[in-house]
Length: 140
Image 1 (cartoon, rainbow, N blue to C red):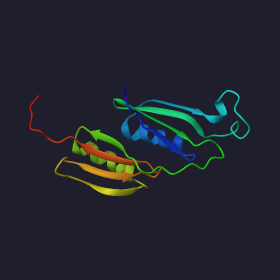
Image 2: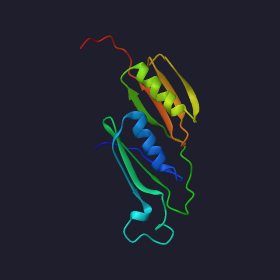
Image 3: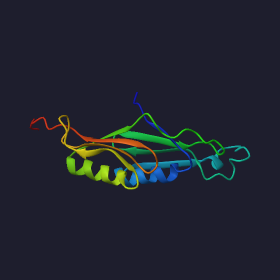
Image 4: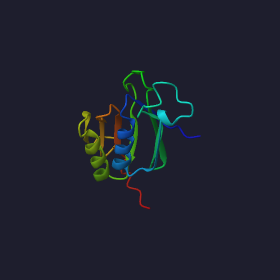
């Protein structure tokens, strides 16, 4: 049974998921708005907010929604979404694209455990850890 992150936004879910699909080459982008829910209550019927969205990123699924209309919700904090890239160039590109308009937490660089590692909070408030696997020297 896989663990799937579920992010919550304050009205930016559609833009965030579309951006993540573009950055990571995601597939299967799906979104349902609160207004599309059966029997949407007053205040939801005209809302552009996302009730549920998801996108496939590599072997995983990232799910997300906006808080319901009229609900502020807490900003995303205390967690990061980890993404491992196949090589340093790809990891660096992912990091730089997520950092555009966001905040670098830990600059992308080689570490003792990875040839490329960095932490960033993107412009939507999502914290990301971008890394590459260590070079073990093993030959295929």
